[in-house]
Image 1 (cartoon, rainbow, N blue to C red):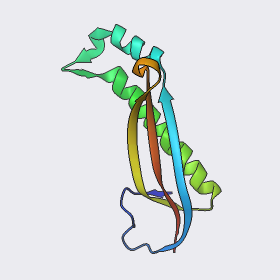
Image 2 (image 1 turned 135 degrees about the vertical axis):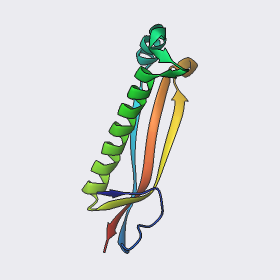
Image 3 (image 1 turned 180 degrees about the horizontal axis):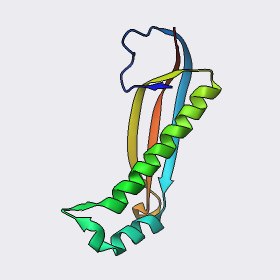
Image 4 (image 1 turned 90 degrees about the horizontal axis):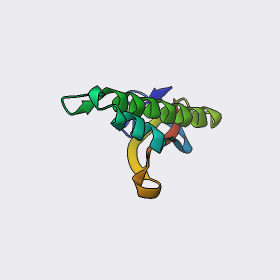
Length: 106
């Protein structure tokens, strides 16, 4: 499946719009506590464990979105947007949300 943040894919005309598709992944509070408890993992202001968890959450969200697009008969998703939100009591969770338009390329 072709994925793009742009509204079109060069050289590939859109023949049908299938609908908006989304995918979400939520990281719970225990992940943040575990990461911050392991201060030695932070090097140069960056946390490898935190970045790994965020990448995993993005992967899950993208897979969910692609599954929904496939169910609609799409072979591409255009106009993809990636959002990060802090949610839950006291900002105890992080949500990664991706959305786009499922399309069929001609």
